[in-house]
Image (cartoon, rainbow, N blue to C red; front, side):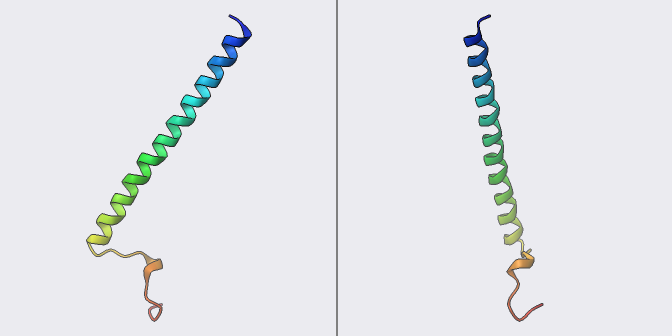
Length: 55
């Protein structure tokens, strides 16, 4: 095995792991957003969305 092969494989592995994590976060974000939309449609509201007069 040559040094160049080792470096190339290392870069490819790092890129694959990074891409996998980015895809995982993107897919998870879409799922969480969908869950929040379903909860809001069911009438559940966020505490941060309270009106100014309600403590």
